[in-house]
Amino acid sequence: MDSQFYIVATPIGNLSDISLRALEVLKSVDYIACEDTRTTKVLIDKYNIKAKLFDCHKFNEKQRSTKIISLIEEGKTIALVSDAGTPGISDPGGALTEELYKNNVKITSIPGACAISVFLSLIPRNNEEYVFIGFVPKTFKQQADIFNKYKYTNCVFYDSPNRIKDTLKNISEIFGENTKMALGRELTKVYEEVKIMSVKQLLSYYETNSLKGEIVAMIFSQEENSLTDTEIKEKINLLKQEGFSQKDISRIISKLYNENKNKVYNLSID
Image 1 (cartoon, rainbow, N blue to C red):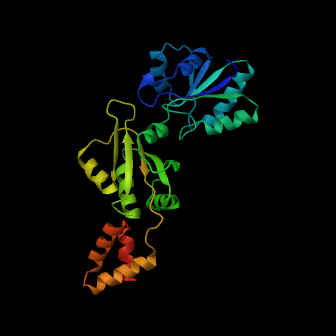
Image 2: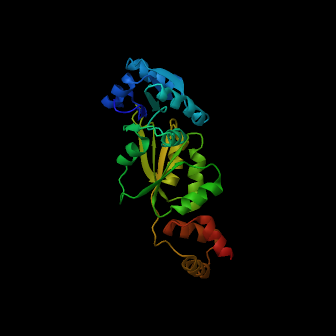
Image 3: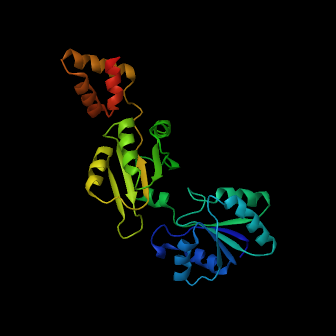
């Protein structure tokens, strides 16, 4: 042991994914600071870990830093874990480590499971570039702002099973129903599932299939050579000359060029 504070990655589902080094550290420290003591107790009971537990979550981690610094000054060793995955990656840990660095505490990270890397390893992509935005915001405007900001990059995000259908509908509204996506749930567990299809197909699939478990999803990057507004208007005018209605025009251009249907409709009105 060459440190007094450890950030330890724990399994995201299958408890057998714990690393040997993580077990070595958790069995040697005096205390484990955890997001939820009930969740972490399942892990430590399975592996006969005797360290004392105390809670350290997003609502109290800044206050807990005082206790942790005090324990370290007493010569105690402490590990930080979250309910699943790596602390500080869309989980508590950032505020605490900031305080520890201010107090010159040496921090060691024990790598392991992380839903992002598990998910991306299962998704064929044209390039390695991606952006991770954490848990997707709730409102349509917030989602439109952030998804449009990264529309030319593979955009990875977390979501809950209770909200993902609304998010998929918003993505369909923002980019079009043919937008290519990947969605993973229950990763590393018995009912692990990864789907790669259009947002329209995802919505249809999950009308009749279960949507339990934490969600990791990715919007594949949009083509940078998508139509400009001027080009869309030119195609609108051509279709108008052929007698198509505004509703039909928006549907046709949306299908052919993966443009947002409402955007095309509004341009046709203009």
